[in-house]
Image 1: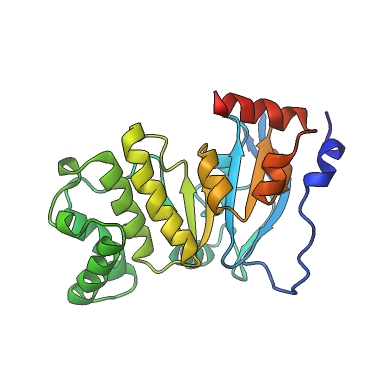
Image 2: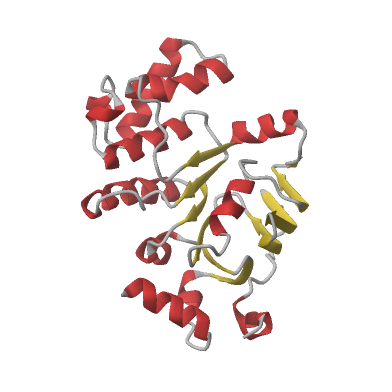
Length: 261
């Protein structure tokens, strides 16, 4: 099967004249001899929820991490809100101030309370006073349903709660874009729903979100666009009703069948 087989699932250009918030042009990435990202080009728009799916090793998480310069690209251009993401440290800092990221493993500071985890970056990077930062943090904790956990340490809360704290921490910097790298993959099944519910609320609020996940129900319900990675390339991208309703693409059918099972 070649890329022409999925031409009907490639996204048509927008007709509303809006400029993209994120542009990736001809992105390539190697790990040694392994060509993990192969000439990938796509765009993301303000307020869009894009869900990236694909098999393990398809390059989806690597691509996501390049949008925050946690991985470097070998060739091509990434432009976020008019700033080219390259080796210039000022550009990297400027982009990271606008792009929040939530990881698989929470990455909370274990020696800091929930409150201090959330307020640290605004106080140090945005020169917000402690009182202002804590007031804003309480609003965010209310949003994720964790006000009562504010003075606890990460080891005193559940994995689902820790991931919700990680979301609140990323939101504390008031980002324009939120990146999620398989945010529920490290959670027990009963904790997944509480995290997805927070993400759904965030999507409905108009936050621009790019989510790498295997949660197909989330993609069907919340995504504006599903982007399918296969062997380092975007094999297909389409609105969820079109993507999940496609029956002619053998590779997509096989992948979705494996997920369902």
